[in-house]
Length: 476
Image (cartoon, rainbow, N blue to C red):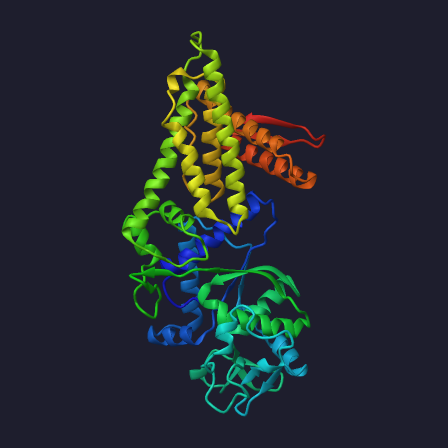
């Protein structure tokens, strides 16, 4: 709902879901279509626009644009679809009319239309049964207009006067505005049809908003499961209180960035706490996020520092150095498996970050000057794994290849890419339990990442019709 500046409480939810989206695409090889609904008509928008002596639509567009600017500044991927409520009023009206015709909704004496919760044939309150059974009357209508206290507004009647704008005309000649809950169901039905895989939002939306979406959508589609998975992000607290506009205790995204915070710092903060858990925001937690990010980047530099060490001298104890290489590769293989398992366990990013941190400590315990070539390559593969993991999770500066200034620099960059790709392929080859289809998808995904990494090293690949490809240096 776009009526004010976005704050870090909003950012926590959107960055968390951006991380989940990236995990699904990169590690689960899922083809994700990410849609976002924009409530650009609302009583809060109307009231705030009047306070600022601004036309309501102009007011909403201003804060919508600011919201997406804030998301971009935090490295959040843009949605695949953005749907404004005001551009889908006919879809809302069609859904409400259908619910009236099938008896799931009723019109009150003043023209408001409510959903009849007692008609829910699949039960009401599945997301939060305790709250559903003790709910107070919905504050969306005066007493006496609703049949039951849990009924909620689908359409709000109003008079056709300038003070009541915006409003839309119905087929019977009356005018009104959509209720909040029906908007999301109408937008989802318009884009995805009768079912969706994942629906997300803040924990405060679980009840009644998401519960009401389930009730009206399953009634409209005559189904028993409209949404397969629900993801709810925990609140961001300040001194124990939820960060919110109503409490006036929020930090805007622009304010956070202007005061020295960074997109990468906040992303690491989000990764260090499970998306579903509420967490207090404080200087110490932000400092720990910065320290972990710095430690990981420093470790990758140290691990990569062995790449340029000369291996011309004869080793003093080749057997011992080969054992070191085996230990390093075993540690990398174990970390790779544990990291992937953590992400697959309800997106357990705190555990995943702990695994990366543990792997990074191998940069401190080994004498880099006395390593075999195989050990050097193992450490390079560790660095690549950490860098690729951070890159996949959305960090804006997970790694930076040096600019191309000489042929030797170019060769080093390409070698980094090749070693990283070989490491990925080798780890996939060691995964004995992967189904053939999953293995094929991961190999193709790794090939796509290899192309991206080569582009960062100023090498461009061009696919040819015969299935082969050719390459050339990127011109500057």
